[in-house]
Image (tube, rainbow over all chains, first blue to last red; front, side):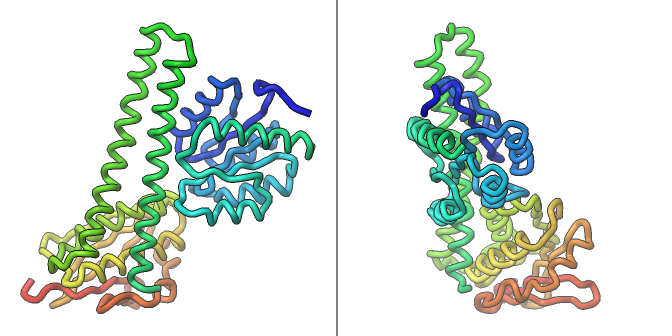
Length: 130
Length: 208
């Protein structure tokens, strides 16, 4: 089973406002409509309203931490696939996230084409899991 | 935790901040490229879009320069042996480099000076001590706390009094000495039982 890119549902949660709006626009230019949130609590609310196929989730945010958001998502919406975004120079958080059920992780700054490919794989996994 | 570990943590936090800055710049440049190559926009629309993007990018570059300069200064202070260094400068440096950790906890840090010079005789020790204490404060203080490092002198010692707004936030620091064991050299934490206030005490250069 596969979906056209324009039917992918992606939610991006990151506290860096400029980064969020720019990345969402770059994904939109590629045909991927992306909803956004600037903190974990808002992200979980948006996710509950309309669960996406893929959640792009910053690991380190003020307030609710990314890994706490990940745990809540995997508990309440296990089909949603989570790709962790981290600016940290170590893979520690990414690996911990994978143990908690994340689909994968990417280190900032990343390549947009690599991210789009990863989202595609995660959408396939979400469709299988759903 | 040894001095090198405290300073390593300060550097890692700053580099995390820097990677976020670079990610922001990379996405903005990437969007410019997308608008040029993938979108059929007329010249006037392109120009208008770029005009809004350039200030944001310059702001990111400015933040990156601040972080790079601060890391450069930290590196020199740790590797060179240039003698005493101004304690207030060192505190501002550590606060700038650990700014991301503070923002994560929604805590703000300010350095208050008395006006009299306070040259720390062991800059590396004070940097490490400040790194340890701020790290412990970020982990403990409630969100929206303003932490002030009030610099003072006592004979041959300098000290940073840790003051909080709102004042009741200081109660969360009751176990601060337990949270940052192994402070380097002659840098110590002292608690004024009457005021319930912690001070980070460090040696000042003789004759200062």
